[in-house]
Length: 153
Image 1: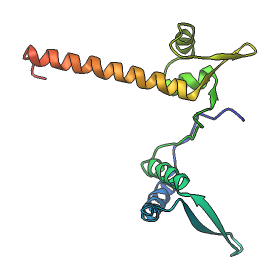
Image 2: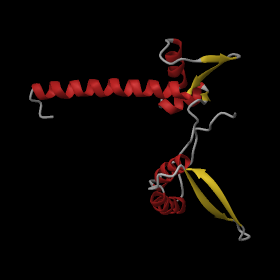
Image 3: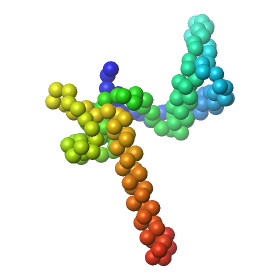
């Protein structure tokens, strides 16, 4: 498997409008409890091809369309994907040297392929979730302290 690409471009205004419309239509289809959906695709020659698609995949597509409809670039990365240190750093919005420090301290598990470090996507996300939770806890404590001191927050 090739490494996932983190760099994305923002969608155009036409893509945003189309994604919003497609998302609205798709959301009406996804009210069903069926495990699969049959969709007809029409090519430029007028040929119709019917495809059965898992409803779970269509829900993921709806999530993608929703993000594009809001003007966001989207990447899909398999949970089991392995990232380079630069890709992991980009995902966490930190520098690559800082990420390497985290790896060497054991904050995020990694393994080496030759001389290169590789990090599992799910381990990077687990670290991000853990750090975000710690930050929220610290902010809640600061807000509570400010309330106790009558600082007007």
